[in-house]
Amino acid sequence: MFQNSAHIKTMLDNLQTGIYILDARGVYIYANKAHLEQSDVAEEALLGNDVHDLIPLGVVDFCISDLVREKGRAVTVVQLVTPGTGATPYRQLITSTPLFDEDGEIEYFFTEAHNMSQLNMRYYAALLAGEGLQQVQGDTGAPRRVPKTIICESPAMRRLFDAVDRFCNIDIPLLITGESGTGKEVMAEYIHQASNRRDKKLVVVNCAALPENLLEAELFGYEKGSFTGALQTGRQGMIEQAEGGTLFLDEINSLPLGMQAKLLRTLETRTVQKVGSVQPRFVDFRLLSATGQDLEACVQSGQFRLDLYYRINAVPVNIPPLRQRAEDIIPLAVHFLQQFCEQYGRVRFFSKEALQALQRYDWPGNVRQLKNYVERLVIMSAEDELDVRQAPENLLPDEAVPAAFAGPPAPAIDFAGGHFSLKDYLAECEREVLQATLEQFKSTYKAGAFLGMTQSSIAKKKQKYNIQY
Image 1 (cartoon, rainbow, N blue to C red):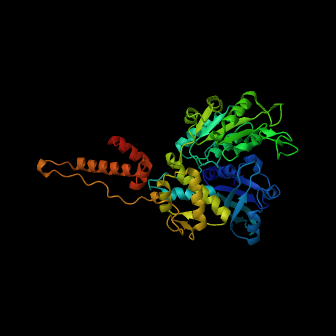
Image 2: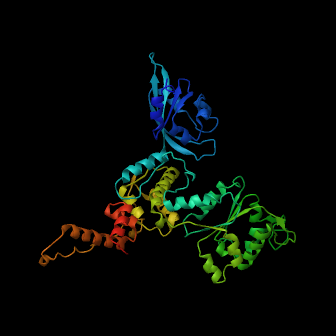
């Protein structure tokens, strides 16, 4: 019936909502494109199979068709889906409607399945439409190499990931740089998971957190009896633990010069020598490093070895601060909101004013600061709709909501001149307002949000009037 109607199938395949149809036994007879994509399953692997087979596989813990059969009417529930192909688990809002035959018996189950994350993105996109803010794009079903757990809406981040993808499977050292809180460890995890070493361990070492007197033993390991307090069995170092996988040295600028020399030797010979041992051991690992400091300046000041700098910096990966990728602020905030609502069992939504304030703020602490702010707001707010001023304390810094400014005075009118051009006068007023607004906000994105214009319109007018700020 359904599968033979090409017209209906075309219409259903163009919906962003997942649709699937079961026969009276609970066997899949149709699934549209959106449902197949969000389930991460091929059509031929789904059709003809019983929906109840998903329960022992752990994909779902119940079948909504059973509830529909029991109640004899449409049922709506929220369900956790855990795909068996390694895809990310997600929650879906599903409504299943029974279709009856002439005898009043259920013949088909027609089910709509909304991925909650995508549904929320579409809600915020509609909320912000026409407000001059960076729009939440949602998931249109288009192919995307970056995993859905990575928020990557800004052109700057998309260009970065496009570049990184070219080096994931090449065993060369990568140096990840960026301000504190930009997500350097997240980038390291992405590179590891996208590499051919993904089946082995990613060993993370925070060089700044290890005491200097223990650093060598932690990194390189030690033989039994090497020093007072050493385990009698000896210990494997973190470099050896990364055998076949990836070693990520965060805050590598914190390594003492002596450790830098030993690390350089390890990278050049691909061997490690434990404390108390005279026998080096070959180790196969890929090195990723990260720093929030300017390593070139550290080299100039004698705090970092030049030869090691060249060795670890085969390809630099610089993550821009959040203030330079404003398109990511709202998608990140929405992502964290969903994460913490699920964690704390809350139902919360951002107000339009809250989203405007979030995007106006510079976020000096970057993604980490935004994540912590959203978590605190979810915990402390007593209302479902989140506004920046409704929490017990104003968690968002005052700079996020700038005080009103008077703006420029209107240009004077020369009545004695004998001629007046209203067009030129209005253009001068526009130029003065744009100049004052850009000087206030220091950003075309923020100026656009304040004036109710798009960022591209602000940029064009800035160029038109040759405005400097």
